[in-house]
Every structure is written in structure tokens, then in C-alpha cells.
Image 1 (tube, helix red, strand yellow):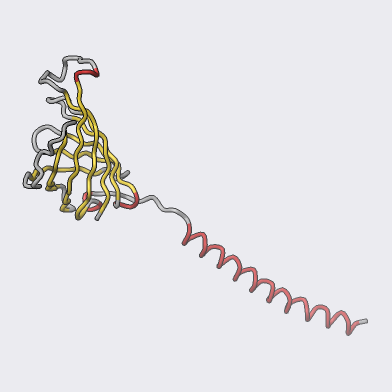
Image 2 (image 1 turned 180 degrees about the horizontal axis):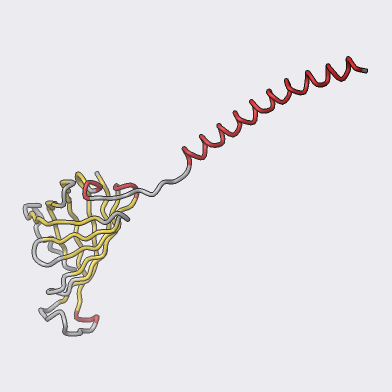
Amino acid sequence: MKNQNIMFTRSVPKMSKARLFRSVLALGVVALIMHVSLPRAQAYDLSSLNGSYADSLSGFAPLSPGGPNRPVSIGAYGPVYEAGLYTFDGAGSFTASLVFNFGGGVILNASWSQNVTGTYTVNANGTGTMTLTGDHRRHFVIGDGGRQLKYVGTDPTGGIVVGGSMVKQ
């Protein structure tokens, strides 16, 4: 009987070492998987927008001039559409080439010769503001790791209201 106890006690440490090794190995694999797969919050900055983006917007523009503080009926607005190519420098400035249609058959700037410039800000959470030449503003959110922008736009002095999106080329 004494020999059986010695054999049993000698085999237990061997099983415990093997079991301990397998447990540590399994925990290490689980920790590695969790480390790789956990989503991480991305901090955005000016460099999050860098390069060329294709832009498309639609919205409404006043049919006749009026002040921004003068309420007007929806019938006083007409559709506006725009396509553009924006190039962000990654440091807070951009240039854009745009074409417009104000609800008629004529495309304004059909030759793509009109270029506008502007500045932009980016908050750490991916929101920001673009200010185009004049007083046009677009409030945006960055999506898909900097490959998309969704925005709403306003022109406080002209009354234009638009929404659109940009996709990195």
C-alpha cells in the first residue's frame, strides 16, 4: 500500500504541472485573442482628413434673396445639388472643385474650373467643421476610419441648407 501512495503522489505533481501549463497556455491564447479583437477608440485630428474625397450633396436654396433672420415658407426654396472633389491637406486647409445645379437644366461650372478654398477643424471624437469661401459651413462626422464624411451644411447669410457625404478616393 505504501508503494501505491508513493506512485500516486508522484503522479499528481506531474498532472498538476501539465494541467497548469495547459491552463496558462489557454489563458494566454484567450488574452491574445481579446487584445487583438477588442475595438479601440480612435482619436481623430486634422491629419485624419488627408487626400482627395468625392462629394455629393443635395438640399434647398432660397429662390429669392432674403435675410437669414426672415422666416420664409418652404415654397420659397428650390432644390440644389452639388458634386465636387475636395482635397484636404491634413493640416486644416482644403481646396475643392465643384459643379452645381439649382433645380434647372443648367449645370453651373460645368467645366470644373471654379475652385474654392477653406479651412476645417477636427475634434478627437471625429466631429468637425468646414468653412468654405464666404460663409458656407459644413458640420461633419468622420466615418470608416477617415474614409467617409457625413455632413449638414448651412449658409447663414444666404439661407442654403444641404446634407451630403464624401468618400475618400
